[in-house]
Length: 403
Image 1: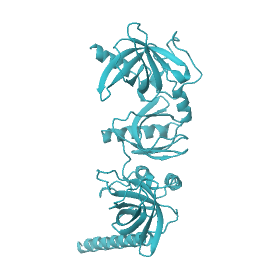
Image 2 (image 1 turned 90 degrees about the vertical axis):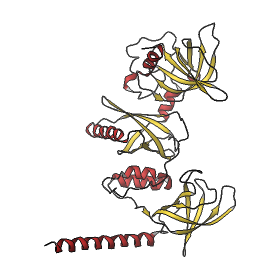
Image 3 (image 1 turned 120 degrees about the vertical axis):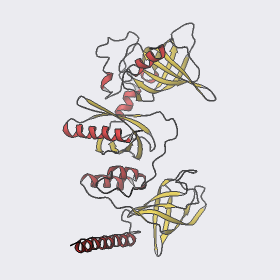
């Protein structure tokens, strides 16, 4: 095993968490002048990764300090990787001289418990608090709902929609790590997270194992949620992704559907649906239907907007529209008119330009008791009932003719 491989093994032998901590790194080698303020991108019990604006020599001993907490320790430069760009930056991997929870993370992964057998570092000053510990306390997490594809976490300090995150869920002697993306965020309430993975089957197995463990273990799980480093823009999923014809009510993930639709609902509507779902109640059905509507309001520049749009799908309290030509943004108010009916709606989602969803918006009714689509939904339900009755009659006739 070469030096680089040994270094990577040392840095990665404890669970890595995506966490941004402001630090100062200073060379302890008199012949190497280096001092930089930067942020960590990943941390674990053995070290961290951070991005700097000038390179430092591999192998140099450094002082690593969390200034705001007056906490410091020593480390060694284990890796230096050029990232390019203009101006150029470098990814630096540091290996701590004394492994342990230097970052002060509450509910740190179980394989971080190295400091219990390690003596105190002569170069480490122990403070009462660290920024990581403060962030951890301000973001205490409570898992309230989970399915094969999503979960809802209560917290007073939620991440923004589109944030890629890593979840560490510990219960008993078991630990589960899951990648996810925040799809809905409610101030001082919580976040809805869609699990993400390259291999959907292995993800489903992992989540099923987690759910089975949580069901059989009465202990309240300990949860850490860390922000992952973004390698590119992460966008919210379009509301109400296309449904496969083979899907049925039993196979569909209703929590995932709700979380993907979350930006179309007010916080009150979403949380009410979430509570109803816990009790086994069905959500308002979303029906794929193309209907013309008149949309009016003001675009992002304040100019009047008055145009015709077509629905992609509708539910009692919202709709997905296409053919929008003006520039709108989430939170804008628009009016929809259809026949003699007119109601106010809030723009909850806007399709990205130069994407398949360009020209689409998701809207939610301002009035939680909206009746804008009632007769359409009733007519559609009646039509489906009649179709089901005809199919049942045909099956009965076919069965009878076989005797």
